Every structure is written in structure tokens, then in C-alpha cells.
Length: 339
Image (cartoon, rainbow, N blue to C red; front, side):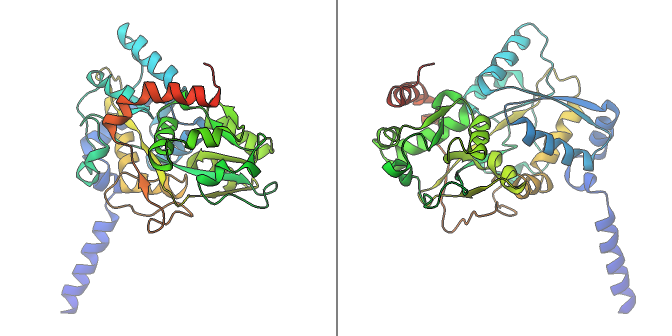
């Protein structure tokens, strides 16, 4: 009996000693081919400082593969992809974008791809079997704790006159898919008059979350709805920020990521996405960057997020596409923003 127990224990040790790459990230031949390619070109609309951390974590697992990142705001990145593809010169091995509607229009540019754990993902976040939610970003509300002594506790609090006179920063509705998700949430969940009430506080408008979060740290504004993954690293690194998820709900925006048919380094590209979409990759993206996940079963949640208290809000994709133009135009008028 003892011999059997010892053998069983040795078997378990052997299983645990099996390279994680072989267990989770694709077949051995894919991994070897990726190592031979040795590099990939990565187009992303996500924040550069955030993606540099992702690349660093990926390279701890696969140091043989160099990731060359090209970062651009959402609209500019789509224009670049379209222009390069039309000229037959699309350089990207992976395209990663926040606006699933824009990516759906380009789905014919991508090859068939699915991660090894494809069945573990929620089907309603997929706009195509070729494009996967590598990242699932979540909106939070952040404030500068050195300036705010009576902080907001909800989305509706951002309409209070006491936070007026340019204390609040808002990322403009046309900035991209993630912000469009927040704008949809505000109108559909908080009420048709929410924009009008919030605009009455005279917020400072920003083209994206990066300058808004920097202004928050510097104290140029004191409160701002922001993607958690852009403010969490600043708080982690010592900035005087507090962040919370409001009880009315947490709008989330799954990305769409895929491998173009023209990828020069397709194996390295698939391995990179396989790692990002694996439980190991998703755990890193949640724990170290404050994202949520589109896995059916979350391995954990970001700091301060209690799924029993805060309801995740995912936009209806048909409405996400249909309502974008007229609602963004109305938002611009309400907030007095001119493109």
C-alpha cells in the first residue's frame, strides 16, 4: 500500500513538473515553432505602460520571443490596419482592439484561431470565432484622496453640485470603444437625463484615460470615472488615489484580439495570445493590472471588487453597434464637445 502511495505521489510530482507551456499554452510543436520565429509585432489600442507589463510577464514564461509593440489610439489604430492591409503591407502579427464593432468590420483579415481553453470563455463576448477577449476592462471611479475629504460613493454622486466647477474629469464619448461602453451604461442604467445632470457640473473633458489619470494624480482634477487598469498601477506605485466600484454597476468592455492572415510570425502570435488567454495570463491581468475576465469562472477579482455587491454590466452588442453614432453625437452636444 505504501509503495502504491509513493508511486502515486511520484506521478503527481511528475505531472506538476511537466512544463506549464505544454499543459496550457498549446502543443509542443507550436511552442517550438514560436521560439524559432523569435519575435512578433503587436498592434494594440491599450495603454502602452500597461502592455509593457504584460509583455514583461509573458517573457518571464517565454524569454525567447521578443514582442515589438505598436500602440495607437483606437481610431488611429484601425486606420493604420486598414491602410496597411489595403496596400498588402499589414505588419501586425497580433491586433488587439477595444472597439469590437470596428474589429467586426475587419474580421475577414483574420485567420482561424482559438486558444486551448476556448470552451472556458463566455460565448456572448465573442463577435467572431477568430477574435478573442484577451483583456476585459472595467470602469471604476477614482478620486485624489489628498483633495477630496467627502468622496463620492456612486455614479449618481457625480451629478452633485458640490463636485462642480471642474473638479470632475470625463473622457470624451468619441475616444473609443471602452468609453462608448461607459456612455451606454450611463444612459441605459443611470437614466436618460444622467448626461445632462452630470454635464451641469462642468467637468473637464479629456481625449483619453491617460491624460485624465495623470491630471488626477497631479491634482488638476479631483474625481474621474476611469478604467481601473489605468489608475490601479498609479495607486499601487504610491499616488494619492482611492478607487471604488459603484453599486449601480461596473461597465466592462471585452477586447477583440486576433492573428491576421498575413502574420509573418503566426506561431509566436498564437503563443502570445494563448498565454494571455490562459488562466495564468488572466490571473496576471486581474491581480497585477486590475482587469476582470471573460472566463466563465474567474480565478479571482481585482482589489475592491465584490461580485456579490457590484453587478457587471456588458453592453448588448447589437445596440453597441446601432446606437453608437446618434448617442455619441447627442453626448457631444450635451457636454459641449466639438470634434
